[in-house]
Image (tube, rainbow, N blue to C red; front, side, top):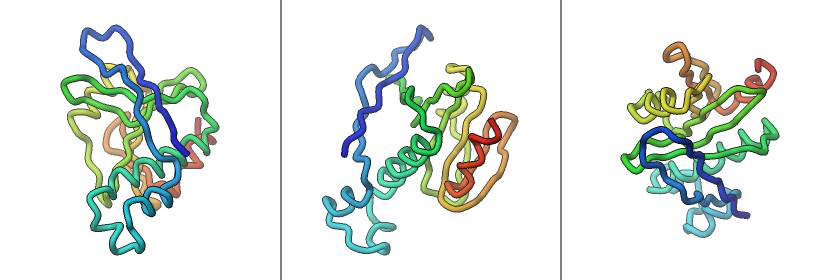
Length: 150
């Protein structure tokens, strides 16, 4: 019912968050606890982003069958929603409930500090759009292909 995501930290010369992050694994349960009974209410609710993040995170972990999953954050506000180690590569994921997500300073910091091989911004739908050499927007419907692409 609850996922406890451990923080990733290494010697980067920055103060990093070292406490675990807690998410409800079942977005339907979250909606029920928040009293959200329909889609219209969900889309206008202040927790829509958190709900999306929890749902999308669970989908990525299920698809990749990943065991070593972490989040990363610094005391100054940089963060990465999900860090996976896949076949010797560092993959980063940000979850954004947006039709046109953009890169942020936080994402660029994570890309550089964590030496990520790739960073995906996961949004609803089936969008696939490169934003630069290592950052790409991927709709949640296109995620299964990531594990076949390697």
